[in-house]
Image 1 (cartoon, rainbow, N blue to C red):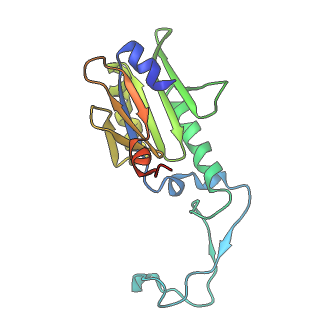
Image 2 (image 1 turned 120 degrees about the vertical axis):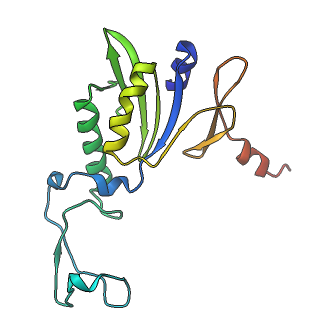
Length: 178
């Protein structure tokens, strides 16, 4: 839907990756208290200033990968941040967000865990800079004629028509025919 609308409105679309997304989830969202033991000496390198003792127990302040609550905590943090920036969540899909300017659709964000596709007007794209800084996005690329990977698919924009395409040419090339 996002890329179809981007083609229709002749919007530029971009792909963003949020590194360590789960670690960016708000700590106050935990619905339970989680404690853990620090790694045993030799299994991890810590600065001497931390003075880790073998009998310590740590209280978790951030979501971490492997924690059952981590995906939900990240999603809730993302929803709250997008909402504070004027995005609305689509009723049909909880991973689709849209933004309006002057009662007209200005842009879309499609979320898949820590990968995002943004498409919108020039004004919408300028507003994204603050959002990208909030989540410390390290990979942000415009979708161009060169295929780019996005959640196991390749996405590109046809030069002549301006249409966005989605495919799996790498996967198809690896198939063996019987």
